[in-house]
Every structure is written in C-alpha cells, then in structure tokens.
Amino acid sequence: QVQLVESGGGSAQAGGSLRLSCAYAKNGHGTNCMGWFRQAPGQEREGVAVLRTAGRSTYYHDSVRGRFTISQDNGNLYLQMDSLRPEDTAVYYCAASGGIMCLSRPGARNEYYWWGQGTQVTVSA
Image 1 (cartoon, rainbow, N blue to C red):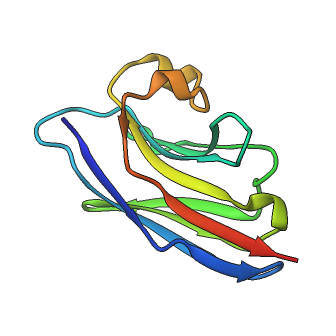
Image 2: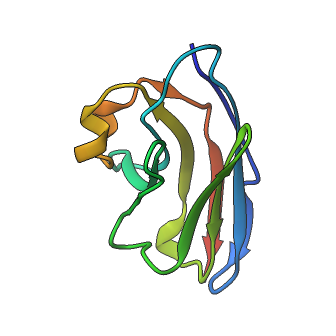
Image 3: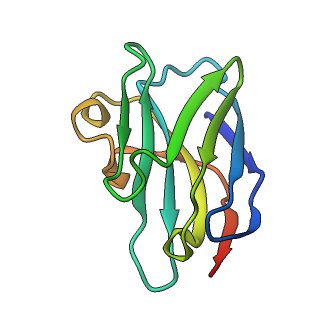
C-alpha cells in the first residue's frame, strides 16, 4: 500500500504561516491524486488541496484558495499555509488515491483509500 507520514503541524497565531510535509512511499502503486484533508472537532473531513498527479492541476477548497499552496517533489507532498485563520484549526491528513473518480471529485474523501495518521494544526486569534 501507499505509506504516508505527515509532519509540520503545530500552533500559530492568526495571520501566521505553517508548512506541512507528507513523506510518501508508493510501493509500486500508481496514484492519480494526492492531497490534504482536514477534520475539525464535530465536523466531517473535508478536502483542502489536491494535486492531480499526471497533469499537475490543482484543486483548492474555496475557504483556502489564495492562502494555501500544494506542491510536490520526489517523495514529499507539501502544504504551505499562509494568512492562517482560527477556523483553519483541525487535524490535517495527507491522502492518496489510485482511482479515476478523484480526478473529477478531488475533494471527496470517499475517493481516497490511503491516509496518513494526521497532524494537528491550531490557530489562535
């Protein structure tokens, strides 16, 4: 299976920045999409930013567009988070999908079947 390990979470003040990293090992599996999801207490997990592997096109949730940037290099997926807001507080998960439905539904968590363990991000006002 694809192995995903997140790091870089922590605390920041509103307006600040954090950078999340996800070290991945595909172990021979192909992936069409890799991305970041988040889950706040009492809320459903939502797609934040996704990179479609082949065409390098990206998806961003409306709430983070213009503030967050997803990028990738050999073996690592990143999420640069700028202009943080208290409502960005959540556990952030790295995810990957080998299916084709993630291409048209990149923010749909049910399209992803490989997940990291999550990293906490806390933004204070």
